[in-house]
Each structure stands twice: as structure tokens, then as C-alpha cells.
Length: 135
Image 1: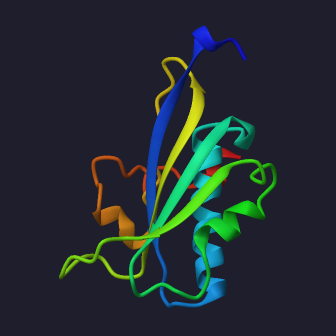
Image 2 (image 1 turned 90 degrees about the vertical axis):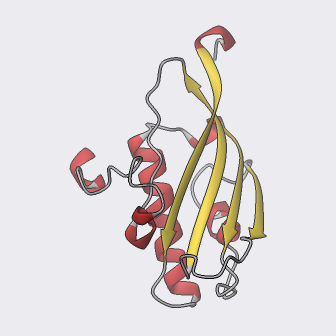
């Protein structure tokens, strides 16, 4: 990749789960990362790092462990942290902050799915075009 035509970009995203179970977390993280990759035409080989945060009511598995099982994510630096608790904040929420190389002038899509759409309605486009429609 030519470095003068690429830049490091921060991409944020979030989703929610219905229950604190490994399968619910896996489904939500896979859906979130699929939206990230598809909407941004992002090759995981261009991802530098990903930090996942989870609210304190999520402890059935690590979101980063799920990400690591995805194709080409085994070389991405991954970290899980607990989201700071604020009274009245969105429960059962998983967020990420990803740093990746993207072509210059790329419009970045920040996926906010499920109940997390309320966190950043200004960035939420998931209701406009389903991910499956982009395949």
C-alpha cells in the first residue's frame, strides 16, 4: 500500500444484546464486525487495533475473543475493557474503537446496531440500507 494515498482512521461502533450469553454476544459481535467490514469495504489486514468495551452486565465471554476467530483477524491487536458505569446508561452494550488504514477521502461508516442506534443517531445509517443489500 502506498502510504501517501492511505491514512489511519478511527472507526467507532456499538451494538446491544438481549441477554448475557456467549451465543448472544457472538451473534452481536459477528453482526457488528460484518457491518464494519462490508460498509467500509475494509480488509481486516488493514486493521491496526481494536478495543472492545462492554457494560458491566456482560461477562459471558470476551468480544475480542470472538473477533479473533474471524478470517484475517488473527494478526489484529485486540483488547477488551469494561465500559465505565454511568447510572441510566444503555445496558448490555458492546462498543468498539478500531484503528485501520483506509484510502484517503473514504467516507467512514460507524456501525451502530440494535439498541445502540440511540447512542449516535447522527452516525446511524443501518436503518437506511440493510447490510445484506450491499452484498
